[in-house]
Image (cartoon, rainbow, N blue to C red):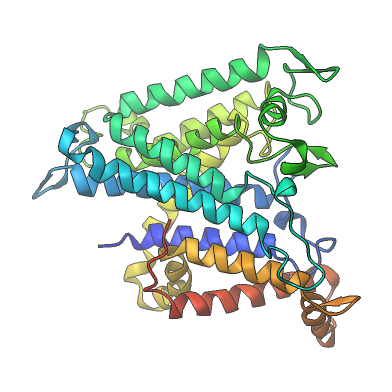
Length: 396
């Protein structure tokens, strides 16, 4: 049986991704739909960590259903999970296959349209290797292994602390001279250690550019803290198991609940923000903690309202839940269609996207609103496709 609230949250996240990534005009966007240029936090910055959190929650849920023994009262604690030799291929081979498929699809989206559309070119030497789906692949693989091997809440918290310490060490301790530039001990764009790792491994032509500087927001070192976000999702699921809060101390029970997780992450996130910037590009620790708090609270709010059991609201929410059942298909479709509309030319100076966007002028909308309407229309189109293709087995 599917978790309607989880599907709904994942679908809402995909919807936000489509809106954020496909404005009618990149220069006419509401601030809440933009990413912070470097330090800071804007509305669009919640989207990716929210998806990783949900992916981690779903991964822990799947593990519990497959390997957690059940009783009349429901599933046991994560500590009841067992790992037997005969199950190793059955769990890890599909996990590696899923991660490989995600990574390859991410490469395809970066390469699209592969020079197939008129006036477009493709070069392997300029293919961006990293990206959104590639980061999800890394989190699914590494996070999936850790969630399966680390069976207790305490063990999972220990892993999160170790990743935190490793990230902070890398960002704050080494000071390395590379190409006449010192890297390290900095959270600025030009000389942070995460950038050094990426340009040491990959040619700058194969990296994303921020302010015309080679820096990949989905880089290798920052994938460590992205894995933290994934694991926090798994931790949230395990805290929801009925055997966690069993003491007579209400405050301790609260700390061991999902509301406790949200509260602790919020307090620590705001406290650490005094010493480390909130930065999505570097996926800093305050960013991890604050987005985890927001994601946990949002999931709890959706569960509390329980859209699935309210007939009127379920009908309104169903299109988003459908998108949440098949997020990979929806994301890939939106990427292919969005880029094709922007690149296919009806004339040397007019793309299909510009033609469609210009058609909205008949409504005399303000620039930012018109840009948003274009995004929403694309979202509606993709949502309808999702409803038709609900049974296509292309899933994250």
